[in-house]
Image (tube, rainbow, N blue to C red; front, top):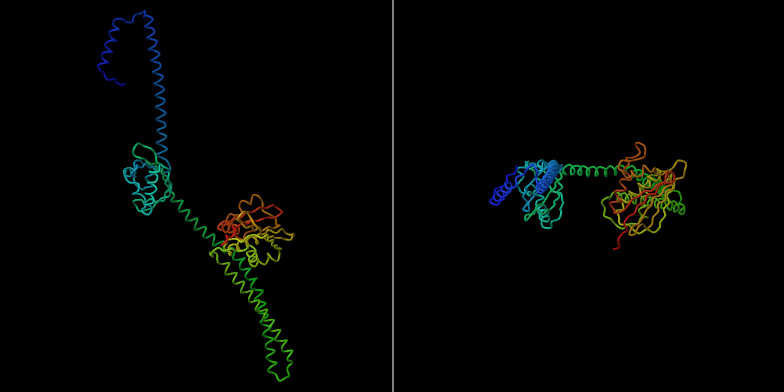
Length: 438
């Protein structure tokens, strides 16, 4: 029971009430005024009881809300820290202990900056100062240094709040150490995939090199052999004792010259192939203005022999602008797309591949590889850019072709899209930025 302080006014009021009660004691037959007062008191008593019940319910709700708040704050999966305007930690929840590696009783009163890795110290000071002065939310990744020397990567959000004269900053910290580790593994995996993609294209490249070099090399050897035979015959005739037919000897030498010229042309063709092969391997070469027609022409020399022997490739040039690209990488894209188009041919149906070149969206040039093959099923189409996804049989490739093409085109700030109708064919559309004027 709450004890009310007894004051002089309270004593006087009490004495007057007792005197009145003595003058007009309650009887068995109370007056109407007494009944009214009694009724008023009873009503007032009921009101007080109702108010008390409402207060009890409000108190119970407040206690329940407080318990919920404590549970959410203390047992949250991320760390919550209250920091004063001078950077001193005032409150820390349970999740903060493993994050900082320090008992939270020791964290209270310490400077938050003392737990930030020195490498990120200046950046933390700038971020915290900006949050306090601008009273705006700030967020960034910081590295914490635990007492045992281990680092903890965290994503930190700072929310300034009004709390009297001294500003207060609420800080939420999420541990992203595992995420950073997975990110590093992902980069390493992407690097391995890039190597795997290059290795996967070696079969295509080796087949193209073997085919392109074998024919001119064979012609070179044959022409040199025939020229050598002809020159030897002329030499033997000159050394002989028989009279010579000068016209006949001249014809022999003309034949040798013609054969040597053909051998020289074959050698130049081999030289051009080797030069193209060198360019093909320059994946880190700088970008330059290049014509899509030249890209397609060069790619045609590297596609497997089966593509050119079993499929008709038609180039439709619609006057596209030059593109800003690394030629070797775009050649690799076109080789992959032409090879895929040839593999999509339907049995018993002549395979036609159209390489259509023309202007694309504003500021872009477009290359479309269109085939009349079997098409791609709708449920397969969303997955065609996934690494290692392939519809071919085991041993027919690793499924890196389109994934690699998509990565190369995207790196050139371009787009690669695929549309397909089952039984009708597939269209692969590549758009690349047009070369800027000097």
